[in-house]
Image 1 (cartoon, rainbow, N blue to C red):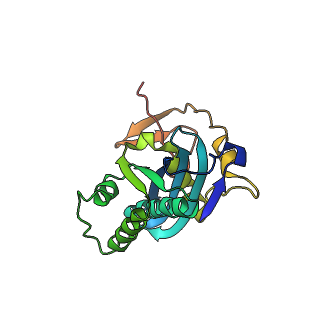
Image 2 (image 1 turned 90 degrees about the vertical axis):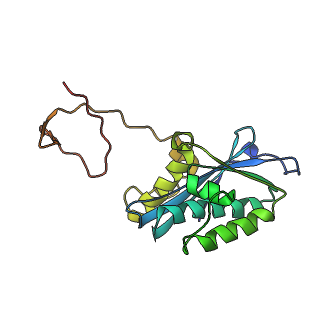
Length: 203
């Protein structure tokens, strides 16, 4: 697990029984199963950043990656003496399974679910909530960074911290021209790499 703590002055003081930390969790797989990674973005209850966790998992499924993020958050909270943990995740399946609203039928997920239940029971307080994906951007970023590192797509340079990756400039959009034939967009005088998202505006 790659973990990057923010500077000590930004971290909360010693946790008391009334303190909650919030862990935004996400996992993904490119292929399902395929190269997968998980990410966890942890803040105080007031939204102040505390830690970032990011791990490449190898060839796994989306659901395995989602549970891996949850387990990483639970392990971090227990090791760092944060007895009250709120999980925020965009996996409706995982959230409802942890809430007891869905059964865990998958033999691959059941051990992960059982471990998560056991670890969460060791906390003084535990909550888990479902959000839509656009409200889980930081955890999604960390999961994708893990997959990029694992596949060699865009590895971090030596010494680069998770904090630095947050401030990396976002590329500006580029306007390209093309035409449609047989339902496929053909670009004029340009090529784009596989996997890139585009926005098409008809003329």
